[in-house]
Image 1 (tube, one colour):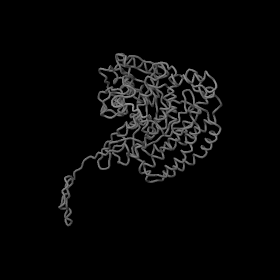
Image 2 (cartoon, chains in turn cyan, red):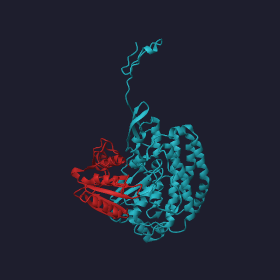
Image 3 (tube, rainbow over the protein chains, first blue to last red):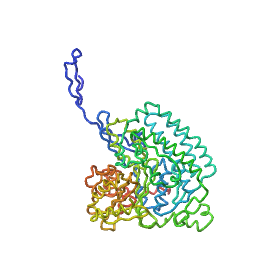
Image 4 (cartoon, one colour):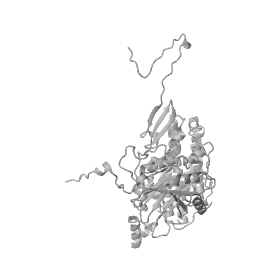
Amino acid sequence: MAMEDQRTTVYKIDPAHPESETLPTLRSEELLLNMGPQHPATHGVLKVILELEGERLVKSTPVLGYLHRGVEKLAEDGTYHQFIPHTDRLDYVCAMYNNFAYCRAVEKLMNITVPDRAEYLRTIVAEIQRIVGHQFWLGTQALDIGAMGVFFYCFRDREILMDWFDELCGARLTTSWYRIGGVERDFTPSLFEKLKQFLDYFPPKIDEYVVFLEKNRIWLGRTKGVAIISAEDAVSFGLSGPTLRGSGVDYDLRKAEPYSAYAKCEFSVPLGKNGDTYDRYWIRVQELYESIKIIRQCLEQMQDGPIMADVPSVTLPPKQRVFTNLESMIQQFKLFSQGFDAPPGEIYCGTEAHKGELGFYIVSTGGGKPYRLKIRAPSFIHMGAFDHMSRGYMISDAVTIFGTYDIVMGECDR
Amino acid sequence: MSLQQLASRLQESFAAGFVQAVEWRGDLAVTVTRDRLHEVAQFLHDDPAMDFDYIVHVSSVDWPDDEERFEVVYEFYSIKKRHRIRLKTRVPESDCIVDSLTDLWKGADFMEREVYDMMGIRFRHHPDLRRILLPDDYTEGYPLRKDFPLRGKGWRDTFEFLDETAR
């Protein structure tokens, strides 16, 4: 005798008269599905609890904090210079832009003007970092959706830039090349040469990525019309970067509050129409072309000059002098061990990183350490809209949606 | 509208709740009393000349020596008008609760939860005020308060130094 299952009942219909039997209502209930924190498509340690009706998402609750390190608390214990390496570890795939955003915030606090050449160098490296970030995003997003080939092509080209970073500052990921008031070192002739070669090499490669995806029915089916967010909601949720511009909102800090050398460069900000995953993908691909344009213009306009602001009480002395001159060595030592004396006050400075607006809110009460440092991390704020954007889509779309934010948990959990 | 005009407009409209406006390094920070916070925020959000439709961040600062110990900081931006404002309010430790702004900006939900998690400030009418970065059953306090030790509390504090050097 078959064991009777308490949960399911088997009904038999007489095959001769199927219409004679009325089918009883089957019991249905919402299913809770735990996704992550070890799921390979969650880009780290993101956990989401999905409430499902069939395969549709009814509600999703992100559970964050698996990578929480208390960076904001650590910042209160170190000097301003000492925090630069911590910023590398926020968004660890795009360390340069984090350094940039942080240094800009401290420069605003200290009221330092960065010399022209340093601004151009910073802009070039920041745009290279944007390219690296978008390549990484495109590769992993395509991989998550099932187009594995693109991943290899993106990573092949990303490797060239990683080696370039390695030559620039000795590190591939945790770069710490930016300094408060300037940059750590100038480009060598070899770096200029390699960068120029890359600029000629890269645009045809973008077309190559696009060929893989634009005619791929699976890619189109899984991105077009998925995770639509209206412009009004996107603004209300505080989304930024390509996630906001995908909905057609023209908000890019490089244009709205031009900083560094962006004011002197001509570039356009691509905007989406439908606010779906496909538009956000399209924007990122267009931004690759725009970044190339910006780098070319910077290379043309750049003049010789100092790469560090000359404010001895705040900025570091040139490395050459530290090794040969006692006063410079003392200056360097004091700046790193005690820090500089920041004026009391508070500032917020936002920078357009490739994920969105990365901002630092710094409260100073004087002295060498920040009293309070708050990081406005775009990944964290984007996760706030996850429930809204995922409702009504399929389980497999959940993966597409964190992908479309370009989420990095190091930054999200801080 | 310049920042000064913006500040004076706020002062005229909310004379009773207005504490101060400070402009420093090009940032405008307006402090209001706690009971008027939601009203001022509503005005900033709805008034066509203000039109602050974008929430940048919600943050908090601990000033342990002050009578009103905690400061809640909101930062807003207007995408159309291209201006920013920082709205601040103070709360005492004995009664640290402010009105939630989640009804005006949807993004305030996660940001306020983070402030609650890190500083222990509660938000009235918040739809889902739970810890967000720390686990729900975390009982060791609020880590960004100044009286919370940097090395942590609880079991982390009980690690003993084991001498593993060769004898």
